[in-house]
Amino acid sequence: MKRIVVLFPYFGTLPQQYGIWRASALKNPTIDFVFFTDCDVESAHNIIVHKMQFEDFKKMIQDAFDFHIVLDRPYKICEYRPAFAYALPQFVEGYDFWGWGDLDVVYGDIRHFITDEILSQYKMISGWGHFSLYHNDNDTNTYFMKRVSGYQDYKEAFTKHESTFFDEFYHKGFGDKWRDCLPDDCWLDWPFDNVSRPKEAYHFNSLNRGWKQVIFEHIGNKLYMLRFINGKLEKRESLYAHFQHRGFMKDKVTDYDHFLVTPNTIIDYPKSFINLRLRFLCRKRTLMTIYHQFHDYIIWRLHLTHYK
Image (cartoon, rainbow, N blue to C red; front, side):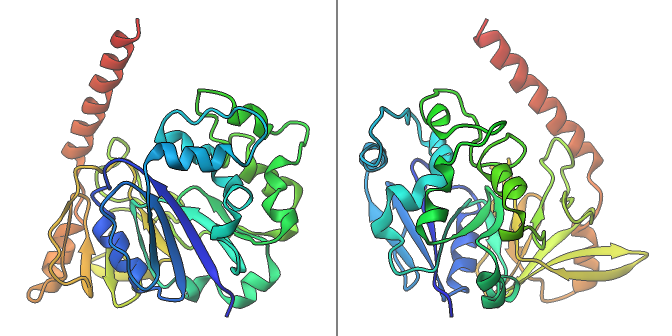
């Protein structure tokens, strides 16, 4: 089995979804998750924690380059994700694939979707900020340095104070360069669910797979997207689900072996009146969507006023 490590530099306050992230990571025991953090992250058999301050991590990245980098806040770390294997080789040594991800996610059975057959065929897996893997070899680990006309240059991205989204798709950055220039090396399937932001739809809509008004069931090491169509419950297995901009979610789970993720609360799977409760949790929430649209508008106006 090919060895995989996912790197998580994370400083500040852990997201509301961290509990289910951790529970689902533990259910993927053949994958290692390595933290560089000042947060209270407990080590486990496949969760490796390096306690440090943000400045310590910044120094490790700076030491890999012969020019002055801009890494003045934790969010800017995202720009450096494509350089993790190059800048932190000691932490990916011995692994076949390395990668990065977000903590506001819940995983399903990762190996069910990303098999050894896929890992043997491709060098770039997914390419998204919420979860990506790359083959651990010199050419792949230094591909972020390759200059291609029309795509972001890493030195420019690493020396700007502004966020350039160098690691993301649709910004002419690292992901776009892989997808456009080396398509035969890229596995670009979308068996995950990137759910709508609250201002777009307070209830969960899968932006990439099209299902609307869904919730998620996690049982054992499996994750399922659930919805009701004409009164009938449908399920679809997912690699992972990503819950962006949902800091208001509350984790009320007591049994992480079987739980539900709803638009505002993470709860134990119901033991009675199951069909009725699932249907209620999948209901449309128009008024809450309007509320979050208004809330986002107020925040935006305050931001503009502050910088006038």
